[in-house]
Length: 177
Image 1: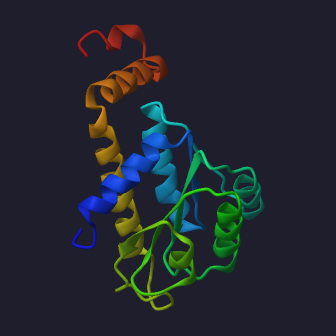
Image 2 (image 1 turned 90 degrees about the vertical axis):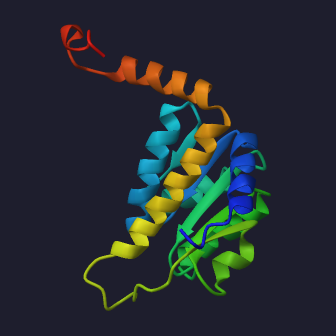
């Protein structure tokens, strides 16, 4: 939480509002957090795309354009495939928001905006990616909340409408809601 800067969050939200499509990039565990973010954003009507296979993410980057926004998540910021995606995105003039660890890394050199993750978790000596995934989920949730509040009533109406359409419970169970 202490690493988040309100001015940076405002810039990210402004970029999100301007973007026709938000594309999410990451590997392994970061994609789980990205999928939650994609689900929330889709429910309020924002077009968010994400692919889970490396090759598919390369195609997604290749199809990108200046009216997209890429949110790229990499704890180390040094993963070879992630750097390749960001290089493609930059060649397509796509703005890039990086969610990555503290310190200098290759991903941060390509990013237009950097949101930092605490680096207390050891990459190889851990039993699971607890703090890094929690940090990523927290950052994406804060971004979602900031975006949501920009048009609170409109986003709430869209979400309620979406939820009503997708609710599969029998109608008699929904009367009191």
